[in-house]
Image 1 (spheres, rainbow, N blue to C red):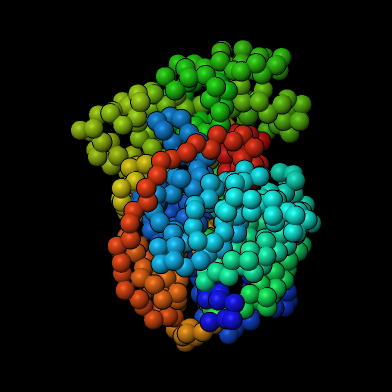
Image 2 (image 1 turned 180 degrees about the horizontal axis):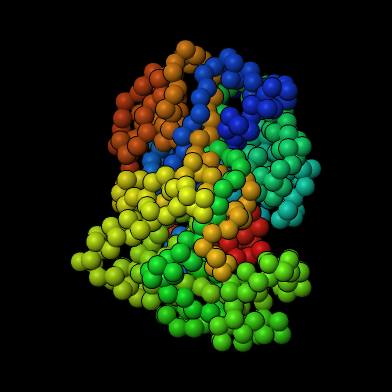
Length: 537
């Protein structure tokens, strides 16, 4: 163990994976990460389903699947309504909770879904899904950091940040962690870098931007290793990243055509997760747009006679005018006439594309459910069969697998997830919940998440000859428990990787606390800007 007591340092690099790292390693752009890989053991790290930030990081730091920790995406649903997830939605103990049980200290910086912060031994500065000025633990930590470092922000100044802004954020993360580690002398540290993911969403095909941000992260890794001198370092990502070169399936459009979705028009938002200011939509009636202005009223009026932007999309694209319309008519006005899912009248629908699945409208579970509980299994089996047969326009299978949720989620909160899971073929097919006038089209985003991330481990007690093939994101938490010499939780779904000696299991107390609402429009806007919430372009 290092002199300052830092036993294990976990460095999270969002979206890092071999296809992203290899060209940078080949040009010696990442010397510090390269030394960790060469001196230790490394391998691809299989993510969970769905492989998206807000659900995958909690899986990594709890060691359990979403059915146990309760977070399936960026949004949490209550019937047909929703809220952005926060730390109170994570219903399983995190690594820092287990360490506090053993009176050990942690410093956690910029980790997604950690706001509001837990009261632990040590310090927590929340990351993604936190507000820009988050509550930190201990109270006053954010103000102390800003006084000591000059500046600390959770997000860039703009929704489409330039590389320099993300480089600044990267440096803030490293500086904040080093400051808090010196103050709290932790046994465990966790610092996460998010810009390595965001750059692909905001600036696709800009390899120079990617390199600039990864170089900055590597420099911070070097500074962290030098100043904190951890006995063991783990570098891990929540998922991979890569091109989507095939097709986009507009799932609700397909379900509408197949008779499982009913639609309504003239509402204020997109299918389920942009603000629905009029409760009529949730009750199965046509909603009215919230004062969208002259252009919006015109679109809404056209919608009443069946001329919606979705149905006009084909003609606009054919005439090359779609871009002109988007520049002239505000986004809220364009949405005013769009077709939307009429939840109460639909059998099944996609709530959010990143959930990778469908929610069924079940009697007694959803507020206005129409699928009798006695017919749940038969209807679900029927829909699974229909979806499994979908082929792309060039005759390729759309999905690698379509299955009941039980194949991917288990635990006390599994029912909060989708009923049917849909895994795109090789994660090259894009899924959308939007209505765009056609069932298939080009992917909305040319880059998006892939299933395999990465893990690299080096330091004291690490078996560098160990075979890490088959490593899963659920394995990270139990492995770190063993590195720290504490028992892993009996509820963990992952296993201790063979690089370290396995410790025993222990039945830790379950978390106790109520869920708190996020209800933050600024966070919603940021998620929309990155493409996680559709219909807000």
